[in-house]
Image (cartoon, rainbow over all chains, first blue to last red; front, side, top):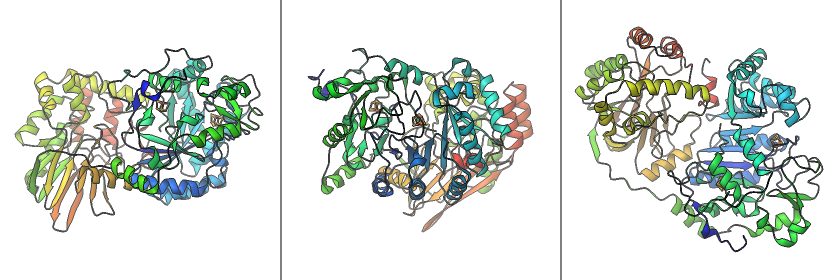
Length: 292
Length: 340
Ligand code: SF4
Ligand code: SF4
């Protein structure tokens, strides 16, 4: 397929830069979940931690471009030693959401984050990932004993006034029933999280992942005339960009593709992007949304 | 995506599928993930450096300027007025609408505006139609009107949570069943935006945001730089919106205003049974913005809702002032202030 040029693909226009993502924890993680779509682990340095200075440069650019909100991910963002300063700098210009695995939420950190959230008019949202409503469902994917540790982190965050959003991937079909969800709500309430917040990530993302473990078929790629009714508004690349320690990428999904890098600074990345990657097909067909 | 990896690197690379056959904890020593293949870190970094653009600072200024280019809007300008009343989200609450129109009688504004979402939540949607037309309320379309008029099978409110969607479906199908096609046609004829002059200021009225009819603009999740940019692009001195159900006002560093007028259809998740509307007054160099609580016969609304078989959780919101649905869409701050 080397003869194929970008003009053979549809391209997604950046309609408005609403969300700026930061790969603030790089691809370094204290877990190594089996489904992690960018294969993070303690030894994965494909992307490194971002520095406060790097983040500040992008924030300055983002203010000029009218960005609406900021999302932080990794790897595990709280492994980054400058993470709390980074959040403080961000909350001066807009709302922040952190996607975390919850393991590093000790009481002191939660206190500090609670104080930070109280000192700004913007929202500081924590999203803690969990894979199912019980240790039996979660631990085989995230690691032995993690269910308990995740809930402990979530409880501490809630006690500090940072009511986290639990993002649950419904890996096991039986969890789709509201029964499993109700039990999980009760578990959270028993631990003192009075108003549990839950976001359910649908099964198809995992499905898409399994599908991806085989090779793509040639038809699993977008063609030039595949233009949906809303153009490409449902895709993240029409409303967001992703900054990492190595520059700015088109979206959070393609950070492991060198060709996903659009430039050094945000101003270099305002053009449209050819949807030439097979991940774009998955993204378009299954929908990938990572928002709170 | 292996076809993108240079051939020599493909040979060096280690094919790695999801659920790898290599140990995840050590696999990345000195390696990077390129798509689904492990390649030496140095090679990945080098490919990264070659990808993308690096503009000069002058070029960057031009790129940003082009991106921020103002949109053109030929919407007719109404006014100038010196005092107006603006409200949103009637949600079929004819009792609150009655009370609001009584208030309008005594406050004598130059005009009364409704920012859309006429149906949903409450009972007997058709009852509000004559109230709006007889009092010459100037309305715009919300996502509810757009959906009803267009025959959509959902309200397009933009919720993401399954429970919220479940209740949204109940109210939408009830409303769709109980609106005549004439009423729906009328809704479809409402404008999607209005421009209104209050004193010297030109204000843009939309339902969700100028970009999307169902965009949620909450106080704590909408940055000031974003709002300033919107106002620049729309070339106006203020934006008035609704859709979220929670009222707020921001005076921006530029001196311009963004006002979410809230809704009169249900309480503002504040433990009070009153609903909220806004009054704008021209005070020469400044625009005064006031939110006022509106008491109405909520008991009668609750009875009518029960009679129509609408969900108990909706009735509970009306009688307690606390939301029981649509909570998952709230950002951290707004959620922290809620009861459930
Ligand atoms: S916690 Fe998140 S980033 Fe870390 S390995 Fe698991 S899925 Fe990947
Ligand atoms: S992976 Fe999805 S969001 Fe990223 S460029 Fe492709 S279509 Fe857009």
